[in-house]
Length: 121
Image 1 (cartoon, rainbow, N blue to C red):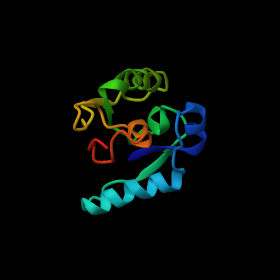
Image 2 (tube, rainbow, N blue to C red; image 1 turned 120 degrees about the vertical axis):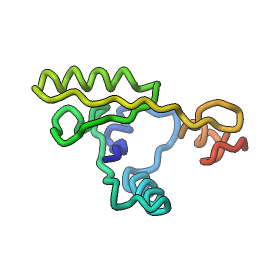
Image 3 (cartoon, one colour; image 1 turned 90 degrees about the horizontal axis):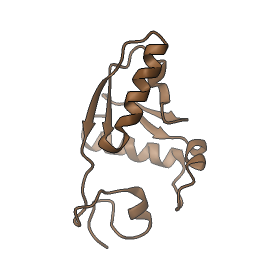
């Protein structure tokens, strides 16, 4: 399960740049899965808040998060315990770095500082 931020949630985040519509971002993720031959292993779901389905879905077993968002994962597990659900295994990953050794981010791409591959523009 791959969460992609819904349009409503994006609006609440007050990003300093334009963000593509949910349908476009979902399609990009699905194309990436297809390119990697993983389309049958992943399902894209909309995130309407920072917790998504993780606080209610009994089928979810683990959560892959960046080190920047690990505190949200701990908060999710607190909410799961309150809902009498097993806590999730938390798998922190490093962000992918651009050529300048800074994280690739949509903000940096939108501002024209790097391309989607992390190359300096």
